[in-house]
Image 1 (cartoon, rainbow, N blue to C red):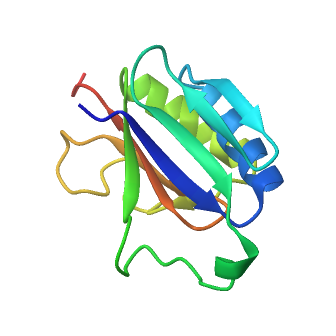
Image 2: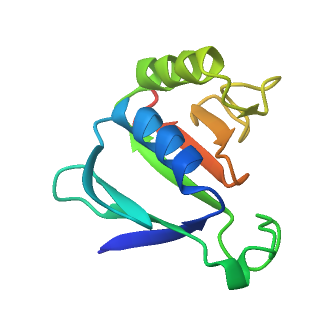
Length: 132
């Protein structure tokens, strides 16, 4: 079982605003905060921790096609939730990816998902738990 994921971010304030508001839409709450980071949790499931990158490593740009994390994917209750998240993102200026094939960017009508980017351009996916 996955316990937690820790992600270094380039600007803690911007990432805090982004991630706390976005993930609140699917039931995550801030469960910890300190000078250089914060944690978001959903019940007793695996949690996410975001930490300000140290100055020594800040010049290293992230790219999801390089070695390392490609994207985070969250399973949500259904297609209505995916659509609601898309509206939230559009209303809040969050970059949505693959708008032309939305919501079937992975091909096929059974995989209903929204793809977005976080402030550091990490791809985030929200996929409906069922086809209905």
